[in-house]
Structure formats: C-alpha cells, structure tokens
Image: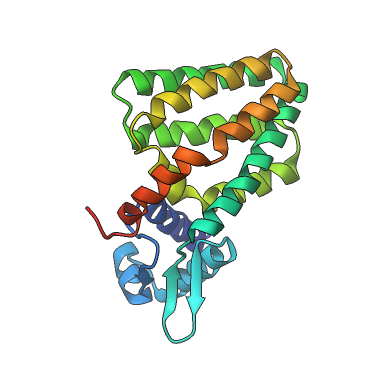
Length: 222
C-alpha cells in the first residue's frame, strides 16, 4: 500500500532529527518545512502530529512544534528500558531464529565489518547498526516486542548516533556484535540476553562520554 504524503514527510523530518540537522530544542516552522518539502502545510501538520505521538516532537501552545530534548535522567531511564527490550529480543532470537535468519544476521555483521575496515564512518555504521538490530528484532518472532523496540529506538536515534562519534566506540560496538552473533547462532539465550543488554546500556564512562558530547547534538558546538 502506498504511503500517504504526510508519512513520507514524517520520515524525512525524522531523518533530519536523527542526523542532527534538526537538533533537540529546534523550533519546527510549518511554513519553512512546507517550502522545504514542496508540499502544503496540511501534510506537514499531520507529520508533526505523528512525530509528537512517537515522542520525537513536542507540540507547545503558541510556540508550535519543537524537537524534544531529553535530560540526562531521561536518557538513563530510556536506555535502561531499551536494554531490557534488546535483551528480550536477543533471548527470543536465540531460541526462535531460523537458519535463514541466522545467515542474514551473519551477513549484516559482515557488512558492519566492511564499514569498520573502511575507516568506520559513523553515519554508515549507524545505518548498518540499525539493520543488525532489526534482524534480531525480527528473529524474536514477537511482533509486539518488535514494535515497542523500534519505537524506543527511534526516540533515541539522535543520541545513539552521537555515541558512535565517541572515540573507539565503533570498533568496540562491532566487537560486541560478534559476541552477540555467536550467542544467538549457538542458541545461548541467556548469554544473548546479557550481551545485548550490556551492549545498549550507557553506564559509567560511556554515559560520561555521551553527556560530554551532548552540546554537539544541541547545536552549541560545531
């Protein structure tokens, strides 16, 4: 079924938010967005309402739509929940993935390896990383869990992308992926659960690095 125009616009705005072109706190002017995407204000308004429902945009009285800014405490709480979702997906995937799905996971992991070998471009790796985790979500064979995991993953997109710009994070992320693939393919559900939780959680130095880099995503440094 063909997507509505507002859904296409929503996806475009979500990408701009994820890649920092529309940073947290940015006011989203309907007229400017309509001109940018060469559409009327109606699909823009519908798209902003959809993004507000997803938690990426806040609709404020008199000010209109603003890209949501998360506090340090909110980030910790959301990454905690995301860690639990990821762990559940990993545990179920280790039990339920078909051989074809396991092969797909290994293929995506190989693509991640090529990206790391080619210099580890954060944006390229970020997209492959989403693909990697998406295969695990699908491998859980639990549609409700997939939907919830993707919804939270989308809300955290700008912050997850920012993590990959911390020195050494791409190589360590790839190494963690290798252990996750091994656990899932071998059917070790408990290990897959723990590895994915640890992979996503931002604690200690990783959290300190993310907080130190928040000015980049808030547009106060370039």
